[in-house]
Image (tube, rainbow, N blue to C red; front, side):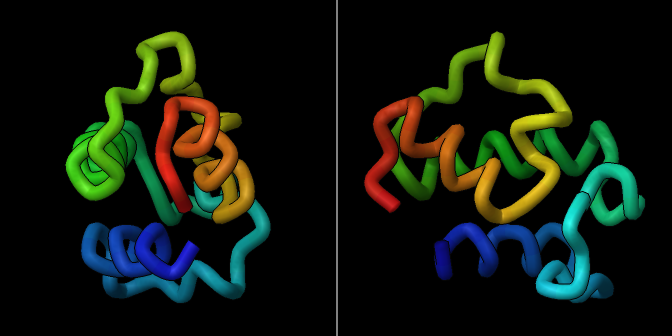
Length: 76
């Protein structure tokens, strides 16, 4: 989870992701950020996130992001 937090902070360093329960609803991540996030997650965890998994609900919190990485074969 620490690596995921580092990626999030690299994409949007101006936000404290620990203080949000929904990154999408709170405006921490937009659609362009999700593209960057998916790319970084793929590279970092040597996975390929399925296109069907790239929906806002899967990227709204650290837990949901961790789950989608695990689901796609990442070792978090």
